Length: 103
Image 1 (cartoon, rainbow, N blue to C red):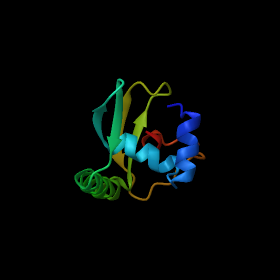
Image 2 (image 1 turned 60 degrees about the horizontal axis):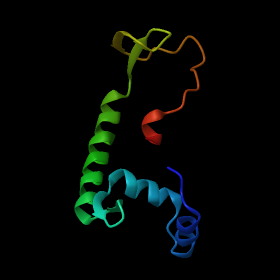
Image 3 (image 1 turned 180 degrees about the vertical axis):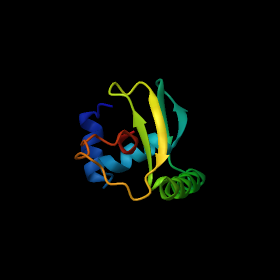
């Protein structure tokens, strides 16, 4: 999302960095405001929901460690899934961006 010059200046003045803005937009509660605008607010209940979600995500990451998913080269089909059981990769892993961390 593009940030206006006004919002950029105010975020600097008020000590609200871009990372905070992204979190509020992603996890906050939208409230309709005048002039066809939405205000996103991060309430305590939103914070609690995020923390609960992140704890569940951490547990899932722990459970996924040592497991693998084999996909075709077009990333269109999952071929199989398996436990690694100490297997070493035969080739250097591809450096792919972690899409889930940037959404």
